[in-house]
Image 1 (cartoon, rainbow, N blue to C red):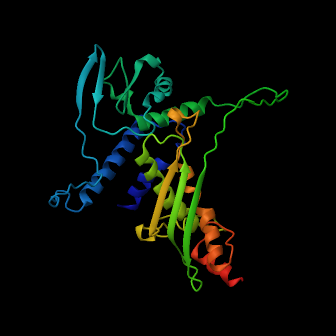
Image 2 (cartoon, helix red, strand yellow):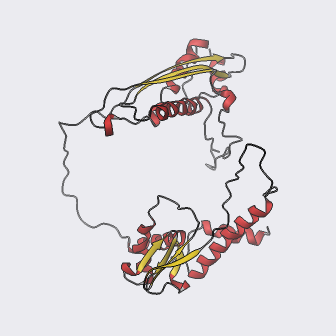
Image 3 (cartoon, rainbow, N blue to C red):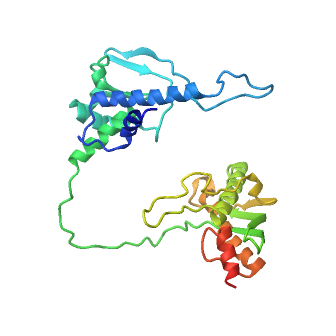
Amino acid sequence: MQQGERVAADDRHRPDPGGRLGRGEHRRRRHRRRAAHDLVDDRRRDPRRPARPRTHRGDGQPRRPRRARHLRQPGHEVCRHGHAARGDGRPGQAAPGVAAAWETDIEDVDVREGIVYRVSDPENEEFQMTIEDAVDVVVVVVDDVARPAEGTIVGSARAADFEGVSQKTFGAGFYEVEVDPATGFVRVIEAVQVHDVGRAINPMGVINQIHGGVMHGINKALTEELIYDPPTGVVVNPNLDEYKLHMIDGMPERVQVDFVEPYDVVGPYGAKGVGEPALLPASPAIHAAIYDAVGVYVNRQPMTQAAVLRAIAEL
C-alpha cells in the first residue's frame, strides 16, 4: 500500500471537519472497507484447501453476500442482504437523525437489515445509506442541536428507601501457590471457589462461568497490566505479546468450583448473577498465599514476577 493510500484509509478515524460528511465521502468509505476486505481475502493462505477428515474448517471471513429484492407493499421496496447485524441490534434508532438530515418525515425513513432508505423514493441512491453511515449523520445532527442547559439550581434533596432489598452476593475462594524466591515467579497450583448464585437455572452454565472467573481472576492478580510511558502517556504494551495473559499451561493443576443456592426473592426465578463476582476471590486469596509462602506482602496489583522479587529483596 502506498503512503497516500494509507493516509486516505486512515481518514475514516478522524472527525469530519465540515460537520457533515457528503454522500460521496460515504461511498468512498464503503469502497475502502470493501477494498480492505478484498485484500485480506486475496492474501489468505489457500482459502479453498479442504478440511481434514472428521473436521470442519472455518476462518471467520464473511463471504460476499447475496442480495435479493422484494416488494413489501406498494412504493415500499426493501433490500435484503447477508450482512450480519452490528452494534446493539437497534438500527431503527438511527431513523430520526436521518430524517432530519434528509429533511423528510420520519415515516418516510425505513431501516431493513443494514440499509436506511427513503420509502417514497427507494431507488434513489442519494437517499440510501448503511447503518454505519447513518450513525455518522445522527452524531452530526445531535451535535448541531446540542446546547447548554439553562436554569438555576434552587436546592437539593435526598430520599431513602426503608423497604429496600439486599443486592449482595457472596463467594469464597482458596488458592495455593508456589513461589520461587530466586526469581519471584508465582504459580497457582490449586484453586477452589464456591459462590452464592441464588437458584442455578443452568447449573452447567454457572460452573463454566465460575471456571472462567478463576482464569480471569488469576490473570488480573498476576499478569494483566497496562504500562504507560510517563512523559507521553502512550501505552507501551498494546498487544498480547507484551500484555501478558496466562495460557492454558499457566492454569492451576487442580480447579474445583461449586455453588450454593439460597433462593433470592428479588431475582428472576430466584437467581442471582455470577459474572463478575466469579473473578473477585482470586486476587486477595493469591495475595495471602504469597505471604504464607515467602513472608512478604506485595502491595500492588498485578503481583507481577518483578514486584514479588522486589518485595522479597526488601525483606
